[in-house]
Length: 193
Image (tube, rainbow, N blue to C red):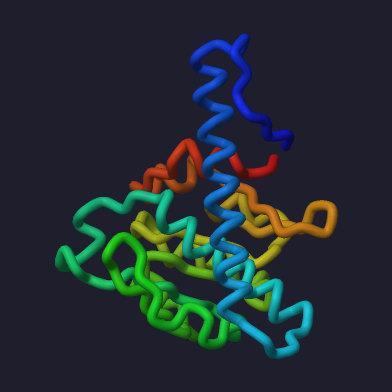
């Protein structure tokens, strides 16, 4: 995806779209830099860095997804990130807030738990259970995010993918709409096909 500063000969719609894409990319980039800086001076392996980047993406996804009001018990209820499989994020997400809501990370083991969150991060180790996971969610307002699972976006909503040694993501907007979630056009414009 090539990003450029809007040119004077662009139509207003093209200029707006280019500006929004540039702004969203800058926002994500700055968030990633911040997250790496928080990791600070200790040596980290590539897996640790990969999941710090994915954590930054998850934080930003929540800023560009709108849940219906009924998805939260109260105005200050936390956003719950459920993780199926081993938690690869460690303490990176601890204490983070998004849109004035605390982010609460919960490890899940059983399918009965998956509807008790707003975001469900599904590790590749859970690939064989994916049809059962998606079925157990039904129409719950849960944003499903796959950890580089082949074919995930046929059923789930957002899937991390590797492209040219970079972490990218794919989005299935129709699956999000079925769960009554609204994904911002800004986020949609950054997804790869």
